[in-house]
Image (cartoon, rainbow, N blue to C red; front, side, top):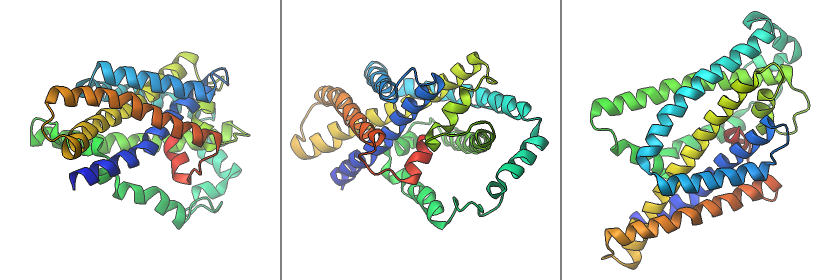
Length: 284
């Protein structure tokens, strides 16, 4: 059972890791206004993830999560404030949105973009998220007490709710301020590249989002390395393997899985691999 779960985790987490890499690639490409190609951004993310995972570890990922969450929520709110102010305040913001695309403010959207298939495509993966993402479930074993676990879960819920609202409002702002975006994945980077957004603020937001993506990739790589070394190698190949050798095996697995995720992201970017609507949403 353990080996089966480990193999499924390896399969599930490759596209999820690839989504994080693609997000960094699109972000760097958009903010740099095309100076940094998407594939170069993906490569930068892969190199940073491999180095970070190999040099640091789970404690580093935890501290990074806490720091980048604070940076992301503050700077993202600041960018939203700049966008709303440029559109004349929240009242004018929604009035202009209603005039431009009134269907976006109805439920379900009159544009036809929101339907039961979209809902299932976005909601269903979350039902399997915990059992198919061991880098998430393992964090339930990290808090030092039940109180700390409740604080962790509560903080995640609050942060996720606030950042979801900010992201949706960013999307509405992009509808009004940005035209001709080829892919919805590029809405956020294109919005950050607008002249109304201070360059320093856009760079800080980019760093925060990049740190979040790479932190997620790091936790995935660290988890997969231990899954391979303990559950697969020890469970199937050598039950008497020492912990020192398990550590060495795990260290070798990190770059291998990172390269596999890169190849998957590259395929998706080239359009040779079918991308679902939910994949594009998560990347954004």
